[in-house]
Structures are given as C-alpha cells and as structure tokens.
Image (cartoon, rainbow over all chains, first blue to last red; front, top):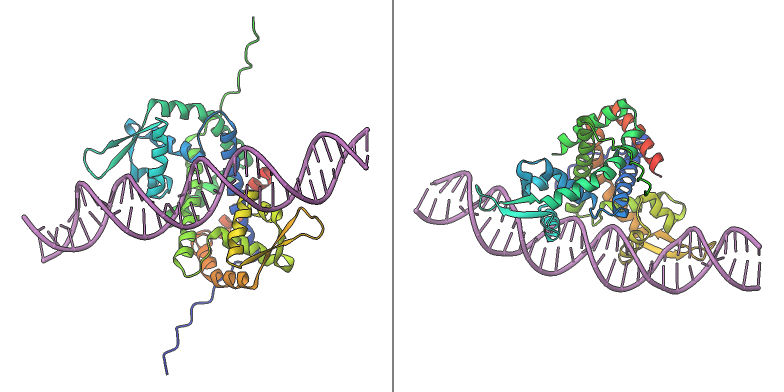
Length: 158
Length: 158
DNA sequence: GCATAATGGTTCAACATTCAACATTGTTCC
DNA sequence: GGAACAATGTTGAATGTTGAACCATTATGC
C-alpha cells in the first residue's frame, strides 16, 4: 500500500472582517494611485507617477546618481522594468547613463539638470495631491498607525 | 497694467515623517502584491492576482454574473481593461459573456463552472499568502486601524 | 590560476494596460 | 417624436511590464 500523502494543513480562511479589510486596502490603494496618476497626467508635466518616484530617488542621491540595481530595489521594480524606464527617460534627456568606476558590470543612472527641473515643476502638484488625498483624510494617530503597519509589512517582505 | 496672476497657495510639503509613511506605504504595497502575485505565478494555478480577484467577485454574485461596468467599478479597473481581461478569460472558458436583458447596451460577465473550479483550486494558496504576509504580521489593533484608514481613503476617493 | 558560480544589466518576445475613437442604446427635455 | 446628450462596451494602436535567455564582469573554491 502506497504511503498516504501527508494531509496539507487546513487553510485558514479569512473571516468577514478580514475580507473587508483586505478589499478596502486594495481598493483604497488603487483609487489613490489612479487619482494621483491622473492628476499628474492631466497636468502639463509629462511624468508618470513611477517616473516621478524614480527622479525623486535620484534627486536625493549624491551626485544625483544611483546604481541601477539600487534604484530598482528602492522602487521595488524588476531590473528589466528599470532598464526600460531609464531608457525612456534617457531619450528625453532627463537622465543619463554612466558606467560605474568600481564595478565594470555596473551602470549609474544620473539625473540631468533637465530631469531635476521636470521634477521640481511637477512636485507642487503631486505633493498637494498626496496631502489632500492621503494625509488630510487621516488623523495623526492613523498616520502613525499606517506608518507602523507598513513598516512591519515591508520588513517582513523585504 | 495687466492684472497680476493670483498667487498660487504655497505648497504644503511633506515633513520627514510624512515622507517616510508615504514611501513605506508604497513599498509595502508593491512588495505585498508582488509576493502574492509570484506565489500564484509559480504555482500550477494559471491565474494572475487580478484574474483571481475578478473571479472572486463573480463567485459572490447571484448567478455568478455581473454587469461589466459594475465589475469594473468594484475592481477599480478601466472599462477597457475589463473588456480585455474578460476576453482573455473567455478564451479560456472561465467566463462567458451574455447580453443583459434589461439594458441592451449592457453585457453580463458570467463565470463558468470551469471558472469556479479554477478559483477554488487557487484559493487555498492565495488566502494562505494573504494571511501569512498581511494578517499574521499585524496585531488585531493594527488590522482594525488599517480597515478604518482604508475605509476613509476609499470613501474620499470614490 | 582556473573552473565554476554569482551578480549586474540588457534584450527580446509575450503579455497587459491605457488612451482615443467608435458604435449602440438610453435618457432628457422641448 | 426628435435632437442632443449620457452611458455602456468594444476596438486597435501605442505604451509599459514581465520573465527568460543572454553577455560581461566579478567572486568563490579548489
């Protein structure tokens, strides 16, 4: 007689409340990024939210430059996605590629002056959106809770 | 003399703490959906997370059927996106289209038995992921807070 | 040293999403 | 009843994303 499969542990289903929270989380997140995205889109600034975030990271880095893979990890993007995104920004002269001195496999993404200007031009609109649609909707306690929660989740998932 | 432009209200920038929360929120969310997506992807179940969510909504609807636009709104997807997604699922016979009796503009998406089976097969894995990566990481208070927070945000954005 | 493995990044093709244009049906209001 | 308008879905093209295969370089083990 063949050995029986070990019984898989019973699934711990979500109760009604957990389902509600999970769906609200997905819905709120989708609505938020869609709203911020369309506000940017309808403006004269020709940046997507992903491009905005990318330029923000570069703007904070020494020499406005970061290794491709660091940037990808920061943004939680695949390597491939970052390659394409940087190529598009490079076409538009908002970013340049430079080879990395220490590691000849490496590539540095360097924001140009034009990149900085584009970021600076879009920043007021975008930040206003984040404030209006996120922080203005929440009490100080809830903002603190959101930080704590996302910190836990990110730490677990990283 | 031409009238001066009214001065735009000064941007209320994010302070360091708000920036931290905002980035953690984006990072945690990306990490979470990426993780859940890849767990589904690596399994034998041939469903993306978006397809899973779509089938879930249908599974809860009377007759396993919903109007296209209701489904799109539920999922916070564009009409076009839903059209394409349903077409792909229809190719795979997991969903069917039927015309809507009351409104001849309308189209009903109806889940098939095969669709239900695919959903049921994938559910234990996916639900286990949501529990493990989300609910198991948070205290009961934080889960409640997350629900409250996302409820506020969604209500404001809807 | 040299073979092997691991890392960094790009490429290509498949796939998914968006946007604008369109066709059809419903609604409003005169 | 008919004209304008709104709502529902679809289409096709452009764009963005993914995952696997790939090349070049660096690290590791013997």
